[in-house]
Length: 154
Image (cartoon, rainbow, N blue to C red; front, side, top):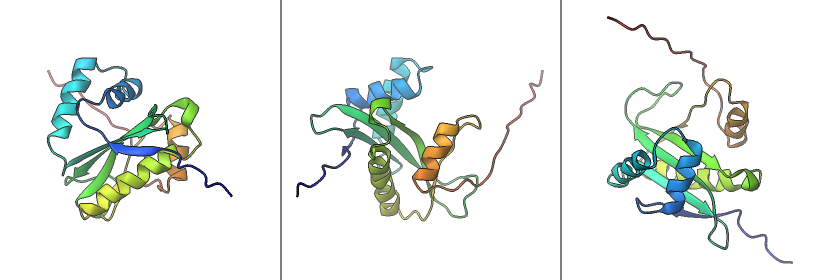
């Protein structure tokens, strides 16, 4: 009986990784390419604090990515410090519901455990029901809902 191939091959991403850049641009389209490149370079300089992973299929085609950071400030809904925080998780539409996000999360969890974390946190916009469902499918539990306010002082 043939073995099922893994849903994705997960590789650490570096600042020159064009797939990581392209996927970031899809998830965060409001930032310019130069801003993404500068942030990628900054992130890659501190591999203990930041992790970034790209999922590819067996041909090398990009499928998605995850970014995680180590946070020592208060993270809503958590009880420990430091906390690993999923800063971004994105899977291309054609690759969704095939285990790619789970494969990426496995790498994120391993990264977090290697840094002594006992909790993994994330967030999503209130109206992003798809992200809420994905988080639940990946084993996250909702901890709280928040609406932020500001007042401009003149």
